[in-house]
Image 1 (cartoon, rainbow, N blue to C red):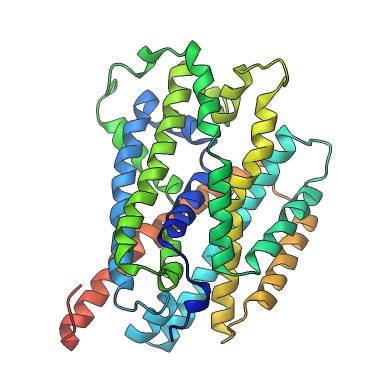
Image 2: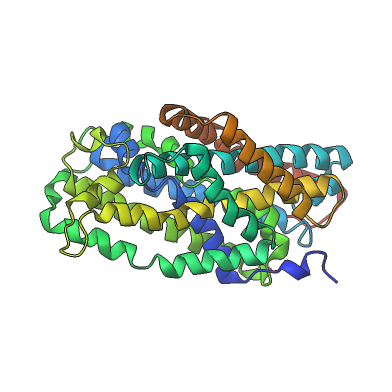
Length: 366
């Protein structure tokens, strides 16, 4: 019997987990970041970043094929030793929990700024943590089902973004490569942050029912993310002028302020309220994965006790110290840097190590 058979996830669920994590938080500020780096050619940088992200994620899949019934922690233990598994568990737990905390703080900042400015930030954080604990304690299968529900509930969002296009100026996109290729290439590292999240493959791979389709799922998930990013980026680029778009922290929200209905005055408020479901696809899976790693370190199969401790730590951190908007942005910048190391650089070195190890030991080549 497979060790992780109880929490197996389907092919579709694996796609929606990766894409949901990637789309969740970076969606709002991404057009501004790209415009600051490469102007209205920033959408080209997205495509290049997608190619790199897909390549890195496929490398992870190839590595995990060497240990199909185990996570990265078992793989490190098998190929390097017990100490490597422990070190990997510690580092991976810290990384996942930092992502969860960073995304949760960003969600609190956005909610307080746009929805309920008079409510204390720690109360907002507590309200967001309550459903987090309920969903994450039930395991990866329930988290995956939650990703499916959020995806279905979010299908209306692209249609809302079509409405501002009646005032769009498509000439903003022309000419291509206005300042040459250098700005486009310089913006590519910034896109790596928006595709962060595929390192979860290190953990959920043994849970996947049909592992033969893992590579196809990776390509579909990252492509779905790319299409969403391209859509919102182009909408913002053609609506705002190249100079104005950099004036807004979250242009994906500001563009909705132009929409007016007789039955609702501020659609962006409704959008942010609903978008909290999509935000949650960042911190809920990562809280579960962080608890999974800490439970593995202590040899526990039940992650719920560790999840409760982490939940209390997050709630306590929100009560005693709540980062400001500028501090939250710095946390996101730091996340982009460590995410580059964990999700782009580390898989390459691990792949090379495993390949050399198997060649020396006479095993099958990757």
